[in-house]
Each structure stands twice: as structure tokens, then as C-alpha cells.
Image (spheres, rainbow, N blue to C red):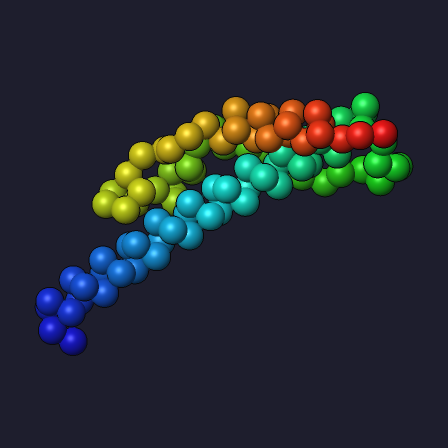
Length: 94
């Protein structure tokens, strides 16, 4: 592999990583929102307790940030998860 090819493959890996991190964030927020909606006592879903994450980070966790391809924390995952949960709760019809 030539140095120029290594740079190109690095850029491709970084682009792929950024896309995967974006999807991870979206999936995490959506699942956390569903967990919150199902755990809401006003939403009748039966006696099964909802298992969820051990905690919701306020942004992209530090170990997942990358200096070039994901340098900042992005949106607030806690606020976005809560908003998604509320959206789901409000969409439930009896």
C-alpha cells in the first residue's frame, strides 16, 4: 500500500465511522425514547418491566469521539431521548 492509498483508506474509514456513529446516536435515542414511553405508568403495556440502558450519556461518549471524524459531543442525548419518549407517549391511543 502506498502512503497516498493509506491516506485514502483512512479517509474512507473515517467517513464510515462518522456515518456509523450518527446511526448509533439515532438508534440509541430512539430506543431510549421507546424505553421511557413503555416505562411510563400511563401507557398500558402489561406487567412486564422494561429493561433499558444503564445510563443515558449527555452526548457522544468521550471514548467514541475522534479528533478528525467526530471531534465534538453533538446533540444532547438525554434531551433528545426524553423528547422522543414524550413524542411516543403522546402518540399512544387507547
